[in-house]
Image 1 (cartoon, rainbow, N blue to C red):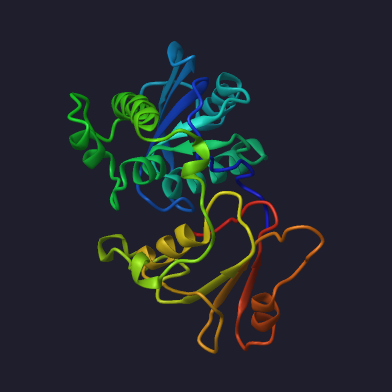
Image 2 (image 1 turned 90 degrees about the vertical axis):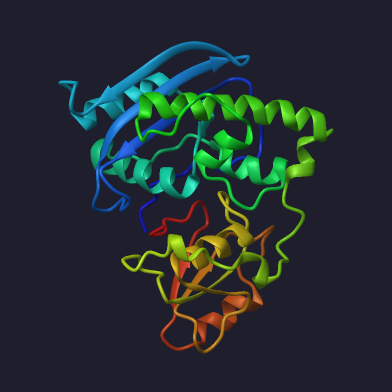
Length: 272
């Protein structure tokens, strides 16, 4: 399995970062294309410089645009909106056009918003309304990036008011109730490989907690299982602590019929 995204999904609030917003022709990262890119670089929360690319207005093609973006962001942590959208599109684009994975760590404002504001839903339009911002969500990269930036700055302020340490946002364990991750039917994707499939997981994943994986699977229209069983179609194996190279769940999954195993020691490449 080729690595398309090797960065980490951080629960942090850096003040030196780059914000990246992309727009695409549709929502399938294996079929649709990036058509707009906007990026702004910040140091100590102060704007420094911008990068923009529009497929209809710029002479450079996507490959040139991605090469320029790579130079622009350098090794910065990238602030984005929606990991499940950004990761596959940017990962596929980098591999297909530059022959390498997208390797920067990312901070997702939706993930931070759920953690800091204790909200279940975190769509961009909802966050704009929650913070009573004057910015918009117009599906234009150079406009929506302003909303992402303002929300991120708001999140920094709210974090300082409500928490003493970033560790308070970190996952406290992998245990959760399946009823707490019921899927959103509006997000079902019948074209996704995990739609109506039974999926289980074990081990540690860089980008997601197991609960977040469960939420994504259920949103797609799949069925996440805390333990593999006879119905299991896919089993995701992350990395294990220390010298332990397996788990009871993994060994059980290996013995089940018709189970496809995903070994993800660094970063999973899923059809989300």
